[in-house]
Image (cartoon, rainbow, N blue to C red; front, side, top):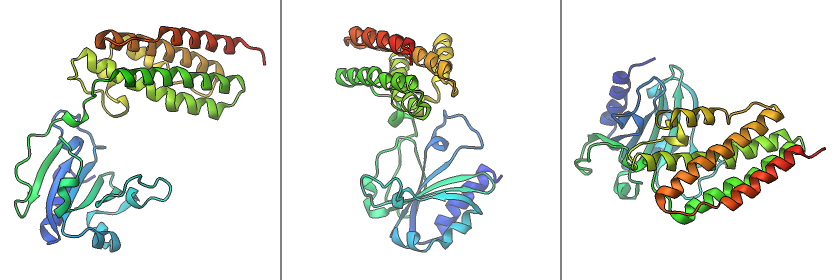
Length: 284
């Protein structure tokens, strides 16, 4: 695998040699001084260019970065089309040696339209058009405090879709039950745990994307309970995981509600929990 130094020299060297590339910005975890370092970190790069289309039309330049194992271009994806068109175009490239570059071409005259990213390091600015950037920080990625409406919506979604899991389990519809458990129900649990971690740290702790850093910040007992919410395909173990999720969600939601001055709908919680117990005991 090529070293970080080799990759950075390649990325900046390509830009220096091509007059169409006017600036280079590094985003993401490699711009974050607090992020753990490992070989799976992507190189999130923005090339500010005079024109985007030539790089999209003629892709022979890709070989300059190495032998591609697999590539994705989300801006022209048919399966998951972008909801909003944008002036940039991204190439997500995983190379045979394991390095990955997520390279976005963006028109230099429309840099003001890019979403602000506090994890940004300016690597090259040929025209001095960008100027000095503030020191990189995870400010853009920290969990934001919930509003009362968002908190209530998260709780309602968690308990509502829990009944879908129960229905799927009773019917022995494994794919459906697991999809509901691992989709909307887990998403709401992770959201509540992120709020919990943020509240308990006065919004200084970073739970990470999809809660990937939760183990660092949750009390050990809560982390161990979260681990128990990841079942295999056994119906009884999925039922057990669902009740673990309910208990953990309740604990986190009650704490967030108390700290934020929100009302936690215990009636909804109790009614759904009792319903789940009844469905589990229903004969088929």
